[in-house]
Image 1 (cartoon, rainbow, N blue to C red):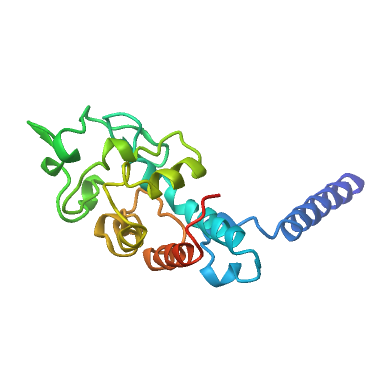
Image 2 (tube, helix red, strand yellow):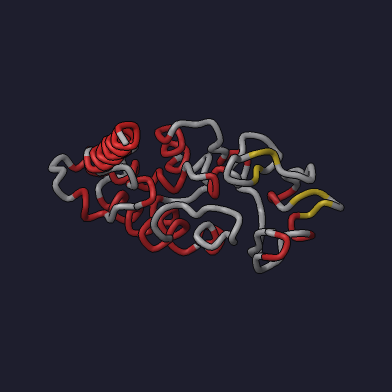
Length: 203
């Protein structure tokens, strides 16, 4: 009976510790959220607010759904662990694959759920000059702003790309075997709009 009482006390203490840790860590689930641009309104300094907004958008930009299509080499990545793509495909002209191994050969306009193959038309890699893999968020930001490395886009066009591009939007509908970035494409677009309006400052 004494042993049973000690065991119950131990379980009670463990449960109390777990409850305390959860209560003392309110940001525990913040990685699953994408705060709205209005959440940064209290930052008085405009440049600091702009950088903070971009850091929030970075939760999406540095997620595997984005990194996998912005690899540092000519081989795409796949999965939530960003492993090298199998089969051994290459970037090819326009990021659409090489002859005999075109992206569209496997990636159709819709996700093919039975095989877990993502789909969108077109399915392609980002240009090599827009490689994000292995870079810091500050480096990615500088890249996004640089017309020499962003396809000649203006900040306004970058905002439109993040807000409206279908391949960007696919990231939130990747199929059952892949995780999605936090938030939504609409929330990401709103963050980019707010970032642009505050001067498009990099963190």
